[in-house]
Length: 70
Length: 462
Image 1 (tube, each protein chain N blue to C red):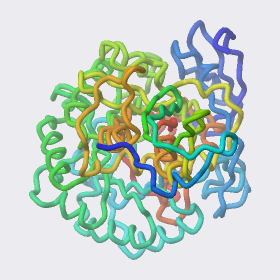
Image 2: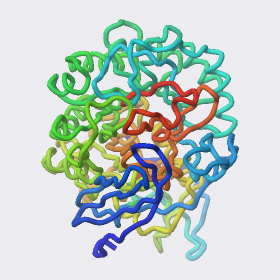
Image 3: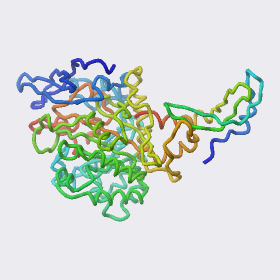
Image 4: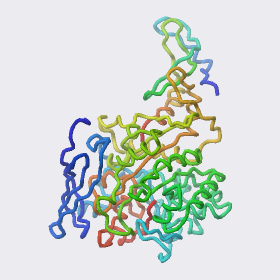
């Protein structure tokens, strides 16, 4: 199973602080003590990670639902 | 919080003999909490409702009330005599329970409502459909559980399921003893094709000794056949055990291991401490009670640490004192990984009750339905050094997630009207009203029902 692949348009963003183009990089996400890895667009200089709306409202929201208590 | 001792906590209840409304108070007795009340005519009643850790005073999950969007009854006589619901109810409907028949093919020594062979005529399908449409107009979309009696005795059950789906109930679950599911080839598939998602399977133990006592006959082999049929039909199964002290309170670990062994068809284990309404062998004494913390500790001890009490949390939907739940992910090594925050919710700020209801509706529908096809294999125990990918975790949790939960129903002795007002499991009565489950089933020590004589049908123990 592959990690969520950023879409090509996600790399059109530039880091506002550094002006660098985003590059694909392994990122560790954490929620309620659980960690996951994903390959996401990241600023090669400062490490800022871009999370698309699709990812935030899709898979990340689903993880949140799965991990929240009844 | 946990360092504080439990303080006396006033509430209101009913006299277990005459069902008159009386003041009541939760009183700490050592590490136990008892509900004590006095009827001017029938004297004092005292019953244990909580024994040991996790401590009563820590088991909280505050909510701001969410009155029914549409109340069918007005406040006239005061709680609990205006159920329909009334505007003073504090939670929306999470699970609507519809009794489709009063007949049952078992005659269990323990039954919420003395269901059995001598049942009256079933309500017509048209009447059921009209009430389902009326209920959803008041409750909004919620989960539906078809119950009885034994609902599979109704020849038109597939049509009822299909009708409920058409009306707008997205998740339909069947509360069943499983006999017909296991014995009649193709029946489970017929129900699944009609739109059924899940079976709440009465499953009290892992050997026939338990069934002989609680159900009057050997049923274990039938239960396993029902699960196989559900697997073949693509139905999710929740094992539902009525837990009685001295009968099957030593079965908790075995039930958990059996359920995990039959996962992912079995999606969870749900425990119901025995409550005393309808038919039961004798009036209950303190030793006939088992409380939620005892179940949490029993699960931990009997599973040799597969789960721990602190991995369970109070509910976000119903009153905290009504239940506990935890979600888990089996690991490749045979362990269980806890998902979620566990009991860490106790000190969170209050959230709207309806928000908890919405989340529970979605969670139960997802967790208790059949797993998706692309299951993926179990993941190893996850260490911080090697977290799984987001995709792999999602695939795994969707398919292999396993819920462990318990709900403590209230009877005439344990009734707390504050808890009743927070109830999210509502029985749809023949008159089209919504009545909190415990109030609908409640009977006095003399066998007098609080609500069923007003036109309700019969429910059963699981």
